[in-house]
Image 1 (cartoon, rainbow, N blue to C red):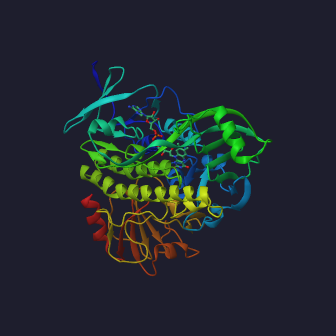
Image 2: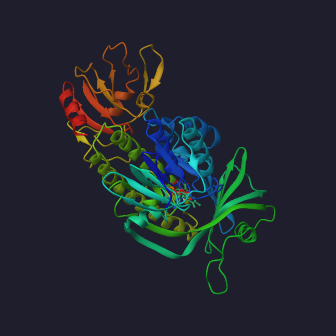
Image 3: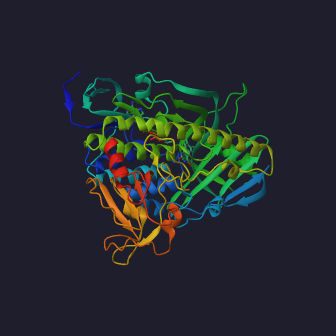
Length: 503
Ligand SMILES: Cc1cc2nc3c(=O)[nH]c(=O)nc-3n(C[C@H](O)[C@H](O)[C@H](O)COP(=O)(O)OP(=O)(O)OC[C@H]3O[C@@H](n4cnc5c(N)ncnc54)[C@H](O)[C@@H]3O)c2cc1C
């Protein structure tokens, strides 16, 4: 092994959406971060094709939501056919339009490689980069550091190592952490990116029938790819055939029964098996797991990339606070405490969604929108059970919940939003109806709402009070990841100081 280079605080293995989001969050806090990626160049497959509303809030905080919205589509009806005949059309996005407390569309369709490209561009603006063609093969840790070994023999020393290296995570395996759950032996779906003509790109076309399903999702705009997911063909011995351009031509002809649809080219081709697994530990000392490295589940419901981005959102501020001396390392234990139950929910929801899709293959009346067995926007997910949640009021909005947005006006009478106020890596103390008296540490910004404070906000439409369930005076401490840390009465500034002290 060659000489060790101690050049980073955090080493991230894996530059998928999870690793890139985490790297951006750390770089923004001034934390030295290195990202190593096994692949020689960026992945070019569409894979995860929808960001949910909560991920859009995260990515807005990082400054890339406008670029994402400009290159994706929000209004994509699901058009269903049964045994080749049109059966129904529905538009799940239309059921959950943006509201004052949740300003983003419930889902934004765009290919994962586009999301990753925008995250890499943001990381570059923040001074970071991805080291492609760089595989992490092993590591050792002690009380002070992690020393990682790369495939080319180099060693990298860091204060923390984060395994964002996908479902087959080397980091998880080297830690010896159990990945509990089950896996099906045979692929459930063949997937890929196709170039197609003859099919209107105005809807996500979904053919169901007794022999399985064919789903063709257009990205539209300048991206002429269609993401295909289909029940695999089987060979004479009953085993699934590998995906191929010819195979997809046969599958499309078989399910659609149409001769006017031509499949011209295939790009990324793959298949996926049903894996439903969660890591038993998310943290072992100075090594943590996030994204698919910590949990895998069926694609139904489109939660994989979203859950990874939201893992990173939870972990990013905590690591930043620990590494900049604003919090003790024990804060990192709250990461598993908060995110593992979310993974359990994700596994249950996507498994139920998968069953609904299977049912849709047999029944004319059931379609892919049935996978919405639960709220998939991510907005309802919170951490009320967490050690970081302190609720002194017991109102409708409670500590641990997502901090809602609300349109307000600023000191100059200009329109603004609470989510804009929360942007960045600091805690925010919302003081409804009064100006708090206590001096808070520099990493906490105080924002008086309707307190006659010239620097505060005015809740002109009453949206903030409604969303936070506040009538008179109250204090709401919001975490850097926009979850409510503490809810207290007006005058309970000491509770806020005690909370921050405990961190
Ligand atoms: C067909 C399909 C449709 C999907 N649809 C959706 C959807 O609509 N919405 C959604 O949210 N999700 C969806 N998903 C799931 C989503 O793609 C994954 O959950 C997501 O990619 C996980 O992100 P990640 O960053 O955790 O891991 P990955 O994207 O797997 O990234 C891990 C990275 O680590 C790298 N790596 C691995 N080992 C090493 C090593 N030893 N050293 C260095 N680097 C390493 C890999 O090369 C890879 O780039 C879909 C997936 C598929 C296949």
